[in-house]
Image 1 (spheres, rainbow, N blue to C red):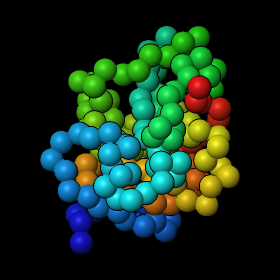
Image 2 (image 1 turned 180 degrees about the vertical axis):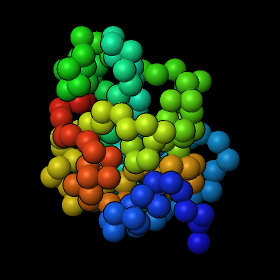
Image 3 (image 1 turned 90 degrees about the horizontal axis):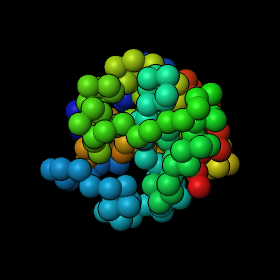
Amino acid sequence: MAVKTNAMRILDSMKIPYTLHTYTCDEFIDGEQIADMLGLPYEKVYKTLVAQGSSKNYYVFVIPIAEKLDMKKAAAAVGEKSVAMLHVKEINAVTGYIRGGCTAIGMKKQYTTCIEQSAEALEKIIVSGGKIGIQLELSPQDLQSASKAAFAALIQ
């Protein structure tokens, strides 16, 4: 049994069911490689991106792994003039997670979070579990609840 991550402890405390998927990896690999390793369909696997708005506030966006974040749509979803991706070196300081292990659940602070609206139609989605090597499968509505997120149009 894998060590419980902060995200898993939060889901457990909220009594939110999830399925744990693990893989072996020592460093960052992208979502498509993870999906391939686990034999998961790309449309069910989501990545967590962190951006900073022109107001200097941080925002979290959860989108399908094969898609690109539409910066204009992302900015509109959070009420900013513009947003820019957070530099990789800043991810740990801002979120408490490392690149490749970043999840919208249980960051250092509660940031405004948006999940791509197409996820709402899916029964389950798979997101990082808060550590490289751990993926969590849960309903989009449970992810929304655990991360205090809103659904919004975010992809190109």
